[in-house]
Image 1 (cartoon, rainbow, N blue to C red):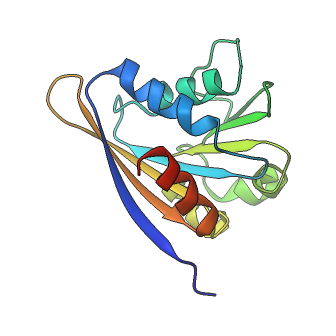
Image 2: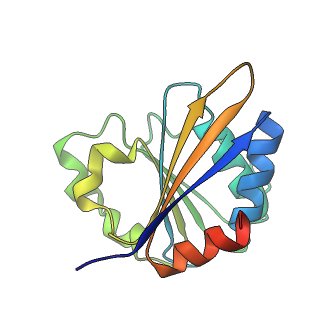
Length: 155
């Protein structure tokens, strides 16, 4: 299956700008959408997810699910926040498909660790540190839905 893809770049000058970007993105997402989130420690993956949660109307504090692997939040849509850094071979037992093809939006931190089980149509976001608080948000949109989302979000 050949899935169309397109790359985008969004420069962010502050954690607030990263959150605002993710908040706008959240309003364009729907049930079953998956975001594969990558970046070094401290790059802003959780900051990004906090903005996404705000865009979904989630009032609860959102932090990294490092030791719990999956945290669920309820907003206008459910948000499934995963950190698969410590997951090894047991990921098949965790029932990821129920999240990937479920009623909510799934954010997977360190997604490259489980790339083989991710859906082919998704949004890959790599947050790269730049000077100071600046970040370069590199986006790869896989599938027409995510290409449309990015075109509306970034242009």
